[in-house]
Length: 96
Image (tube, rainbow, N blue to C red; front, side, top):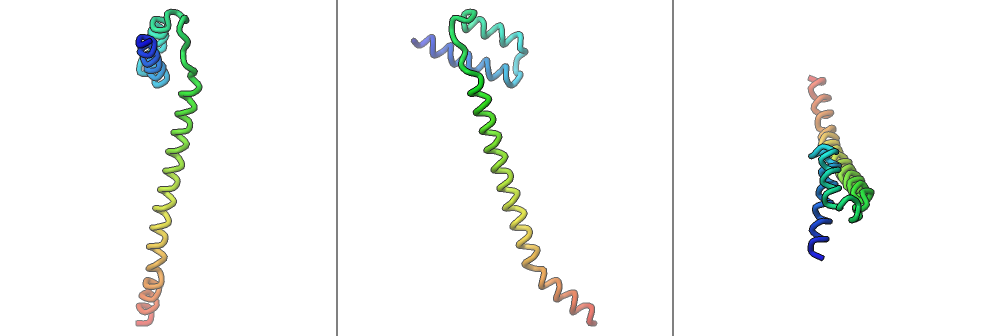
């Protein structure tokens, strides 16, 4: 039982290496054939890895958009909060 769990972890790592191109595809295929005993052991669904990556990418994008929105809001409030003061200063300086 322990060897099967160990093999599954190793297979998961090899799939990550293959997906992220840390090793060449030929090497990854060779290692997968070695650890799956030429197909006797099922390879976990690769779609779940892509699904997790897609969700993580979406999550990061949403956070980036929120941070940019907050930053633009703070800058806008800061700028427009002092706008009447600048306008008053401009009007007073034109009068002299």
